[in-house]
Amino acid sequence: MIFVREKSFYRTMMRLVIPITLQNVMGILLNMMDTVMLGRLGENSEEAITAAGLANQPFFVYTLFIFGIVSGASVLISQYWGKADTDTINSVSGIAFIAAMTIGTIFTSVCMIFTDQVMGLFTNSENVIRLGASYLRIVLISYIPAAITTLFCGIIKATEQVKIALFANSLAILMNIVLNYILIFGKLGFEPMGIVGAAIATLISRIIETSIVVFYIIFIEKRVKFSFKRMFRIKKELVFDFLHYCSPVIANETLWGIGITIHSAILGRLGEQSYAAYSIVNVIEKIVLLSTMGFANACAIIIGKEIGAGNKHKVYDYSKTLLATCVLACIVMEGFILLIREPIIGFFEVSDYTHNLAIKMMFIMAVVGIAKSFNAPNVVGVLRGGGDTLTAMLMDVLSMWIWAIPLGFLAAFVFKFPFEFVYLCLLSDELIKVGIGFIRFKSKKWIKNITR
Image (tube, rainbow, N blue to C red; front, side):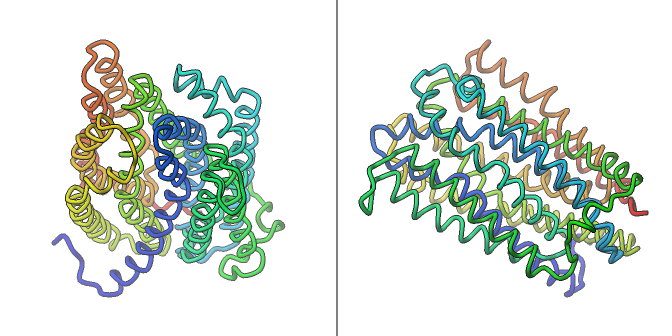
């Protein structure tokens, strides 16, 4: 039987999935609203979209470092939450905070000192480098605040507190839309600032988001009762546990993020119009797959809590239900997006070539998206939530680096295949992971209690 019959399970699942999905939607919209609104600049839109998209690649890699730290910490925190051990949760949070601030300082410094060189990694167009550098110099100021937001939202989500992240993201995206409209197009007495206005709007929105989350942690949060004294009361064996279980997750997210950045570096050298189509489809794909990540995060919380509470006998059946529900939801969403693909792409004022290429790429996105709807909750939710972080890392990273990236490179620069085929080659690892991931899931070897 695929679906469990416990009504309480479905209530818990939806109580987590819906707010987490909506929060993910808001987070992606906050990060991608610049691309959407810069797409309304008319004849200058394609160059601006490309510059903003490439300038956000360092932030993308950076957030995956942070997400790796948070996801790794959440593996421990969710299981300790099942044991109601808030002292250890505070200590794990302290270790994660130190790691996140270290990474934040490094990324901010490198992007500040080598802005033009960082942009040059993704494109050889001097004008795109110039525009992208003007954007990057502003948004990099938000890197550390963004890390704080991601860290504490992830930690409290692992303890089943999901509403504050949704509220903070919702307010930030609202501010981003309003400020983008004012600053990009020059409204309410402001001069039109184009891509620089988009960067300022993103910076202000992220600072507002961080302020809300920090206020909640200090003055409102009552379950874990965070304090600096408890967070930095760290035992050596806990540091070992953090490194042992979190290092594969950090390596997973980092190498996967670098791989996605290589995708952009490959595709960014195949023409500005083609990359503009990729940027548009990438925004749509992220929004479509947000429910998948909602299921993945909910799965990690539920699985970790049940293992920590000593209910291993329920874990496999719960996981099976979560995976099946996620795949079915994704099929429905992908079908709906394909039905309305023309008006979605038509929203962007781009050339006929870019429009038609984006339409072709959406079909590829839909097929691969179904595979992702199994892979993401299986890797991020089931395997990691169960404590099997090393297998999750090997499965995720090796398929990308040994297969998809070399195949995409050859397709682009040796065989010179059409852009949409190169795009498919770079995503082909998702198809491989379905089979490998299913075998590991069926083995049940991923169910591990990692608490002390």
